[in-house]
Structure formats: C-alpha cells, structure tokens
Image (cartoon, rainbow, N blue to C red):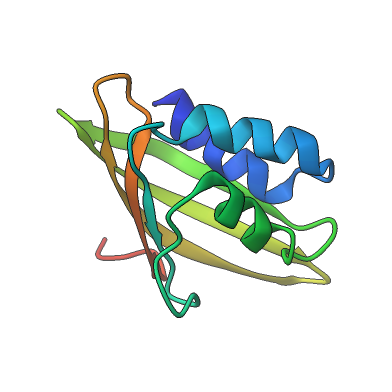
Length: 116
C-alpha cells in the first residue's frame, strides 16, 4: 500500500486542521494535483482547496482504506469506507495516478464498491 493514499484518507477524519493539512501536503504531489469527487461540482486542484473541502466533513467522521490497495506501476485503486456517525456511511472506489515518489497526482472517486 502506498503511504500517500493512507495519509490522504486519514486527513478526512482528522479533527485538527493543521494535522489534516500536513497529511494532505505529504500525500499530494507538489508538481500538480487534481481530485475529482462525485459530490464536488469541479476538480479540486490544491492542498488548500482539498483541506477546505474536508473542513466540511462531519465532526467525528472518518474515511478508511479497506482491503489492499492495488498498485500497478504509477496507478493505484483503493476501496474506502466512509463513516459519518449515527449509522450513516458509504463505500467508495478511488483511482489514483501517482508521481515517481508515489504521491498523488490525480484521484478520481466513484460511489459504491465497484465491480466485484
């Protein structure tokens, strides 16, 4: 598993904004970045914008990579379980383009677990 993907989703449930920003900064490629979320109207293209989106994540919520991350050369796929509290949650499937240091260049999310 790449640590960048683990850290990227750890930031989603991190209650401390500075720690969440630091996790994102370490996970995201410094050269370029784009995050496509099924609930976002447009691509998110910076650490600051990603942190701002996560600031709207419900308090106490979390995102956890479940199972193994599939890694092929500079591409990865992960299944993520979101827990919003109160019995609310969902599973999503994410695809990543990674830089030479295995940091995230592009992340694309889809609702649901994907084809099994």
